[in-house]
Image (cartoon, rainbow, N blue to C red):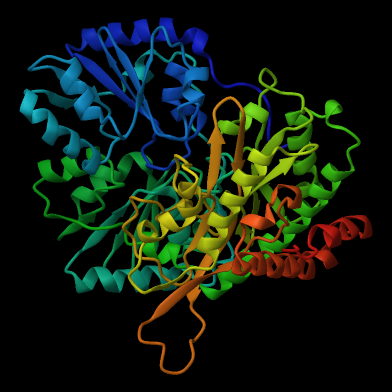
Amino acid sequence: MFQNFTSSASPEHGASRLEALRKCVAQRGLSGFIIPRSDRFQGEYVAPCDERLAWLTGFTGSAGYCIVLEQKAGIFVDGRYRLQVREQVDLAHFQPVDWPETTLQSWLLENVSEKSQIGFDPWLHTPSQIEEIEKALSSGNISLVPCENLVDAIWEDRPPAPSAPFFVHPDTFAGETHHEKRHRLAAELRSTGVAAAVISLADSVAWLFNIRGNDIEKNPVPHAQAVLFADGHAQLFATEGKSSAIEDHLGDEVTVHDESALLEALSKVQGVIQIDPASTPVAVLRHLEEAQTVVVRGQDPCVVPKARKNKTEITGMQEAHLLDGAAMVRFLAWMAEQEGPSHLTEIDIVTALEGFRREAPELRDISFDTICGSGPHGAIMHYRVTNESNRRIQDGDLIVVDSGGQYQCGTTDITRTLCIGSPLPLHRTCYTRVLQGLIAISRARFPKGVTGGHLDALARANLWHDGLDFDHGTGHGVGAYLCVHEGPQRLSRVSTTPLEPGMILSNEPGYYRNGAFGIRLENLIVTVDAPALPEGDAHRTMFSFENLTWAPFERRLIDPTLLTEAERDWINLYHAHTFEKIGPRVDAAARAWLDKACRPLSS
């Protein structure tokens, strides 16, 4: 199994660890310390040695902060984790804070006195984060002080850093050599007068050099940082020995150095250095400022090109979704064959689904721990089943199954909500409203310049009609055999990145009723040039989406009376395409089930 079911949360240690950290904070003359859920590479997913937030608090979500003061410890989480955090932390010692509604800076202004000094590790925060906080705290004469990581100072059994070697991602999957990528981006640096750009994001490094790694579970990225020069040369910084297997691939224009040499190397650059304030560690910027280096701020040069998948990458993603769709259909057919729910548990379902995926020799890993939330667990958006939380399936349950695979040709992410027994009318209404949101995004046609922030409301309109909503973005970007969550593109109220052809997004509206059930449906979609309109109607450059994901929806949960004719036609066409694409890839029994699941809906 790629997935295990051991619990990594340890709230029982929270009090003692918090006490030890407070002593450490006081010894440094500080009033508090900030613990983010991040590493020096500023990715969403971190290695065990960087799980500082989870080690201290017990909270295992993929986003959040903790601020430890002398008398209070606030743990900041967004809408995805507000149920989870209350189940994982010791509420007698940690206070959950709704973030971003309450910001770190506003909470500090309310809870610390003037002239207080709050410590932070400058390698784990970006200039954008720290400067926003500092600006607000200046009104209270409160300062942020860079210091050593105080969690590391008390973490006696901290796991070692990852040591697996990097490996090559072939050009046949990348669609472009790393020489071509480096020189294409270098030309852009030259045009703006920049001598070199710092690249801190691990997935940017992976994309730029066509390499991959095993430093982060389920996300094949290397722990490395880089400097790209305006002449196309580059320097790669990583733990000694990890890059030995890829040095021939890198060639003469890329030199490899130990990760500790980054700051010294930057000191030797002649000319302007570009940093991304949203991903470069504060430690790098402050080093450059102390050396009086001319610094300009700009977006990581790899971020948007990486998001705009080329034809080879899109073809690979299409194949990955056909492989994954076959596994999902076999799984769904297997679920339909179960005589009754009483013998199945959430772990049984996760194990079965992974088993179907593993039948494909192309599978490299799952793309994240499968979410299988039955009944009330479905309302926990990022629920991860453990041996302790494992729930037996009951008649009448809805089950949210959110999963994906890492194939060398691409990355998948799909969610389906299943029904055990006969659904309630409320279940069918809510499911259909969620499905209508997915359809609205899938059918969207929009002009160049539109962002995910403009489109997000389409997924919610039918839910809003019934007074419902969901507390997460409608969709995130997805990498090509890279991170399952990738920026900068997303479908979210706060997204400001214009969508462009080649950008891949998840389309995953949902609805969650605390203590009762959850519903989420998810397909991956790719942004494309919209089909031409009748002559005389095409006044602007228009884009639309094409589906990558192929697996049927739960017919018993669809209420056709709530659908418009266009929505019903979309479902029927989607199911017809699903049968056409996936039917030949599964055995006769699964194909027979798929045939029934994909038959047209009646009005």
